[in-house]
Structure formats: C-alpha cells, structure tokens
Image (tube, rainbow, N blue to C red; front, side, top):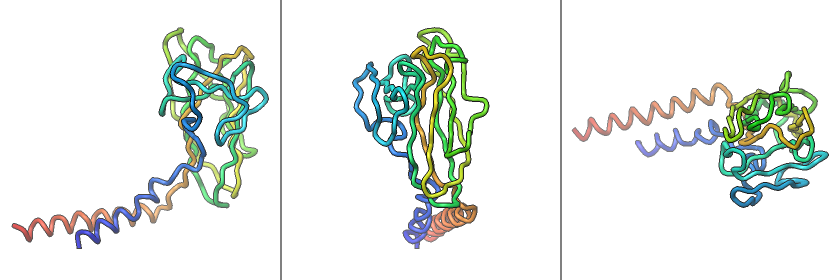
Length: 204
C-alpha cells in the first residue's frame, strides 16, 4: 500500500514541473570558452536579428543559470526569436532573467519582449548597470501568455547603438497547471503520509 501511495503521488509531479518548451533557454547548447564572448548569426533554437546574438561565458558578469548568457546590443541593437510549439487555447507561464550591463546607463540597457503580436514589456525592461566591475544584477520576470499552437517569442534591444546593452538568461515557457492537478497532487501526498504513519504504528 505504501508503494502504491508513493507511485500515485509521484505520478503527478511531472505535471506540476512541466518541461521547458523553449529550446536552449539558458544558452548552454552552444559552446563558448570560459571568459570569452562571440557574435553569432543564430544560436541553437534561436534566430538572430539584424546584427546577430552575442553569447557570453561569464564575461562582464556571471550567468544566472549555467555559464552562458546573451546580450542583444552586439555591434548595434539586435534581436532574437524562437517559434515555440504550444497547445492552442492553453495558458503558459513565460519567465526569464534580465540584467542591465555594468557601466551602462538605463536608456542603453532597454529590451522589449513580444509574444506573437503582444508587447509584454511596456515600458521596456531597463536598469542602470552600476559601476564597471559590478557584474550582472539579475531580476526574474514572469508573464502569463496564451498558446496558439505555434508562437513567436521575440526579444528586441533598443537604446543607443553602442555595443553595450541588457543581458538575458534562463528563458522558460511551461504550461500553467490546472487547479484540479494541485488537488490530486495534494491528495496523493496526503495518502502517502497516512500510509507511512499507519505502517509506523503497525510496527510499534
């Protein structure tokens, strides 16, 4: 009985911790030597914009997840996008980490985020990067978005074309669990706890 209760509880864990639908959301699929950076037309899963994508391995700050992160003001303001496969009429949580570039003003650290034709960040994300040597100061952002079956997630840099701008990491799109899923999960965990207590009492 105890084993059955454990299986019942664990069966619902994948639903509560849905897999990330974004390919290469933390930019670790592309090899970049430690302490270096480079500009690429595209990255695994991502299509670069007018001036490509700058991939950095712990340069001018550390990544928020893993060792790589991206900057979209390469030689000038650029963008990147990915087509995310979703289920139509299903709600998803889009989350990501953003940091202003050290030593760069807020006006040059701006990034807009789009889900299809919907602008999610108005005003744009921006922040003062602080003094040189201060590194990254990551903040997490989260939005509820509606899937259509095939959705375009776009990050777009703006501000001064000075090759210094905001950074991104840890991009995630996952389905919002239905309320009844939580109830079933809690019921399974409760049953597991009850059976564990019963087994302990029987042993006593």
